[in-house]
Image (cartoon, helix red, strand yellow):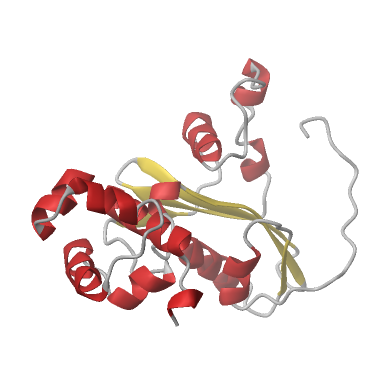
Length: 212
């Protein structure tokens, strides 16, 4: 069983959960009465021993299973969801920048001012907010009956593995529960498989646009 554990995934979970709780490595170390170097090792891929896992789970307010799987369905209590399409360009840009979907070195003023145009013209949009901070979003193109396509599902790295992405997709599917749902991705295949999507080998063809 130990060989199946993904140290990198566990490390990312610990980092993201710690940051979400507003804690530093020193804070964790003090609570567990260990050195901050030990915490640093965990956040760099060293898997904690059983005793440390139990105490770490207590401090992070998650289960040991959630740490070992690198996944949590526990939604932060202060997350609110909205359906507005006109997301602020600045907030949307910062979210895309954080997940690596845009490059500030090639961003022009025209691109920035139109950053939310794809969302405004989508069939529907859901966004996740922590107070006034945009932490996640998704948009959908749909005929509202037969076929629906998920586009631009993004969650800030420090808010990932907390169920926000899953909740955003659930809200989308609730709008068109009988629709066929599709998504094109190469980085999040496993995430979508976990929530019911089936991988297929259909061809996906495209013509690059002005902004690509």
